[in-house]
Amino acid sequence: MDFNTVIQELETLGKERTKKIYMSNGAKEPVFGVTIGSMKPYVKQIKINHELAEQLYATGNYDAMYFAGIIADSKAMSEADYNRWMDQAYFYMISDYVVAVTLAESDIAQQVSDKWIASGDELKMSAGWHCYCWLLGNRKDEEFSVEKLRGMLKQVKQNINLVPLRTQVAMNNFVMTVGVSFKPLHNEALQIANDIGVVEIKREGKKPGKLHAYAEIVKQVEKGRIGFKRKYVRC
Image (tube, one colour):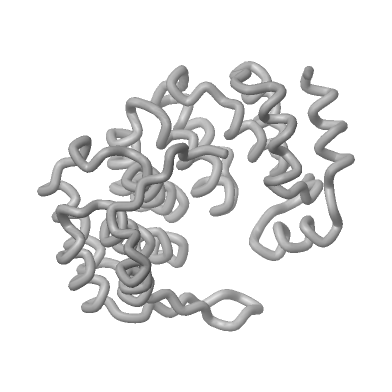
């Protein structure tokens, strides 16, 4: 499938209701409103096609950008490539669920994420923390430094109330993910999640959201899912 065919197919798959949901979360035109499930048959057909992925991502169309993240060759992308994608990620559903997810399947995921976390930029920090979530939920515990992750947990505890909205969400998710998917620091993550308590997320035009990593970790304990690892990061 070439670029024009994919765009035409995505436009055909778009649903107005889904489009409204995406736009209520920050998506801007152009956007078709395609569900992830609707994309999967085309992903199976195309598989990995990085040239096509770059063409789709450059459109600025949310659905095309999401599709690009699924078919991109994550290991072929350099740090400069990931920074370029981040610069074009204008809201969190792209930074956290396209760029961070694609980065999580690369060999440079941690080094790029570390720089984004230290950047002071809301979406870069959010993507960096979320990339660690995707990594921890997929890779073996042995691939991570316990001391490094312990330091990151302490950083969350100290700073979660001082950072921008999307970074707060990402930090909370990081604590929860460590508590569920990284056994060596399960107890420490549980304690820090308890110390943090409920994180209230204020959203313009919506009721405040409430995040509670401690409660979510306890739920997974009860389900016997501590140590959970997903087989794939991307769809």
